[in-house]
Image 1: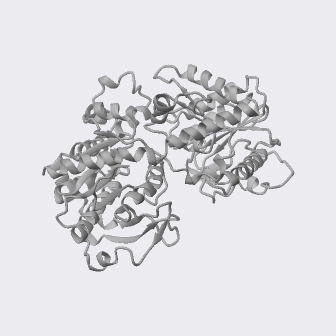
Image 2: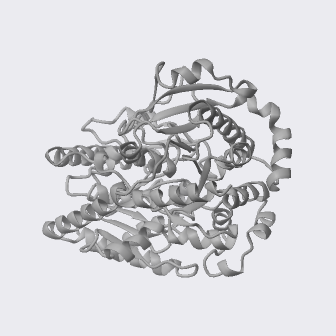
Image 3: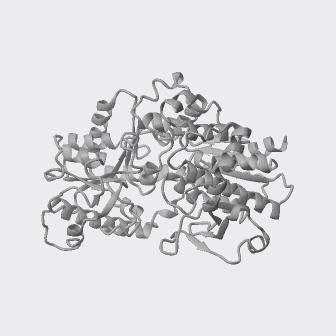
Amino acid sequence: MNSVKIELLFETSWEVCNKVGGIYTVLSTKAQTLQTLYKDKVIFIGPDVWTEQNESPYFKESKSLLKEWRTKAVLPQGIKVRVGRWDIPGKPIVVLVDFNSMYAVKDSFYGEMWNLYHVDSLHAYGDYDEACAFSHAAGLVIQSLYDFYTPESHDVVAHFDEWTTGMGLLYIKAARPRIATVFTTHATSIGRSICGNGKPLYDYLPGYNGDQMARELNMESKHSLEKAAAHAADAFTTVSDVTARECVQLLERKPEVVTINGFELNFVPAKNKFNAARRKARKQLLDVASHIVGDRFDDDTFIVATSGRCEYRNKGIDIFLDVTSNLKNTPLQRKTVAFVMVPAWVKEPRPEIQAQIGKDEIVRTDNRCMSHSVNNPYEDPIACRMRQLGYEWNNSGRVSVIYVPCYLDGKDGIFNSTYYDLLIGMDATVFPSYYEPWGYTPLESVAFGVPTITTSLSGFGQWVKSSVGEGFDKSGVEVINRTDSNYQQVVDEITRAIVSLNTADDAELEKFSQAAKNTAEKAQWLHFMEFYIDTYRVALENASKR
């Protein structure tokens, strides 16, 4: 792999040591390959949103790392930092930034960003102020580290992920123009909003104007910041061809490089431990399912799942639930349990289920479809749809559906296992996304040898079609064609795909599983890091012209 000379490489994200979404997976799996290329010249910058009572399980503080800088540097505005290593493969250096003091200078900073870049912060609400306070502080920390270790260098890159870090990029561009800047949008804020509001994105994309839609959807500030960062960056990237088209239309800048998201297989158990891990996961999943549904599920039960961010339409959760309803009227060879593993506004693990886990006796409870209770059972779209489909009271028969509305972090109170520990036990996964710039969930599934179903509107689905070949036998991945207007067709095709897996013999299933693993091998960072190298080269070349 060809590299490019870099003295320091900063990468800033709200999800550094903070596992809240797919960007965490991008950064945490990419880190090992970056460390191989630029050993300890890579510094991740993340938010210090942790307390002594609630420490990040991924951050290991160090008193020796960057000690000289921490001792001598005086950070402005009362910014505080902690330095350590991210407890992931590669163990890169991390600076966690306490940004609370930045709110005091918020208004003057917003005025400065308006004057320099015409960022409209006037209509801000929600998480905008928090994101900007963090990214402003991150920019000041990068400036301080640059001045201390590499003053005047032209071989420093500062990479900012998503609109939430845009203010940091804009600050660095103005304060230290020698630093080459990279901005990656993992999903445009306005594109996600268009879809989340039920509007058709794809058929009408050529007619959309990003600024106009931002005004219509009350997204002016986020869109304005994201667009300014995209235009100010020395190199602008996104994660798939799907989102690249969005960027051209809605942000009015074509990404120089499409930085496809990779994965590392070190999350997957070794061959000699794989089968035991799968058996353990299946036993746990079926035990929990038995106690929730009130029926015993034997070892031959077919287990299918969907998971991801709680975006009911965008992630295709609506389609998945309709598929389960379809399956009830479809001849199936094996009894089926379908899990909806989507974190929501969870209240607590259900105590009556906790009390039954591990026991032989099966007792039917009042709610036969949820592992945890939620705070808003009559507003939660998944709970409401499952109630409409009758799963709350009648969840028996050939197909049962279980809603797991919590983060599977190993301490949820019911499973007490991580998502990866359970994923290996699945027979199939389904991710029928309507809006999916990349799609780590299907990539994670194939890494564990689980055949998966996704759509042509996901970046991962398009990559499979163009690079590997769709179909369970070729890639372990069935890519369903999805448009703005073929909802029922997608439901029917996914139903047929699940039936084909449910009725396949052991030899076929083993072939599909091996094809899935082969696809995961082709999606390792080893193969995709070249896109980042190209990005750094573009950024450094453009910065050198200043």
